[in-house]
Image (tube, rainbow, N blue to C red; front, side, top):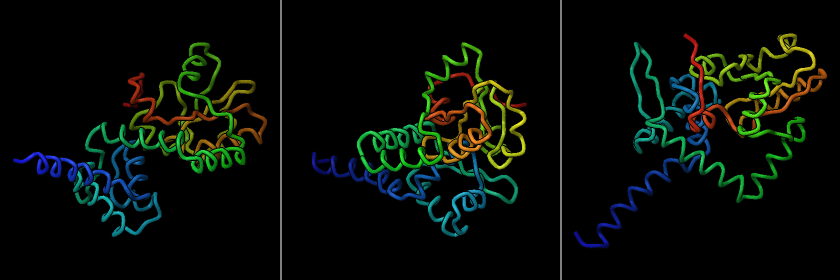
Length: 221
């Protein structure tokens, strides 16, 4: 094998990976599957796509060995092929936030509108947990909470929060988290909590970022 042929083969395979990710819906699928396995029907519903379109995107990711599937009865459950896939997405996401002004500006404008501009980091949350003066809310869907969550976090899906605000003790700071920096559940929750006079902030990162740092997680039995 000649040197150029060697390089052509290697870089062509790497290009296959970048091509598979070069679509906004497929990036959202990767972020969604980082929360846990999903059927094509669930993915289509989450992303407001037709089942045919969702399936097509999944096949592209599967062709690049980025997702795998497991048949359970009549349904095929998709999951990330391994944790390295999320690491690539996380690096791309953070690079975009740090280096692309439009992403940073859009993120800031949205969070200012939702009263969630003052986000805290995982390190800051760990300090608050050590001081035992914070209530942590997981506002993702219950299925994602059951797949794994931050220890001591209370599951209050965003569509139930308005009815369950009474679960928040008066005078206690509330930290809300969801799927990641681009997930709007936490922003909506902070806006609602502050309207009710509750001190609340969102976690800048999401549960997959917490898990990737190999911090303790809880999985209900």
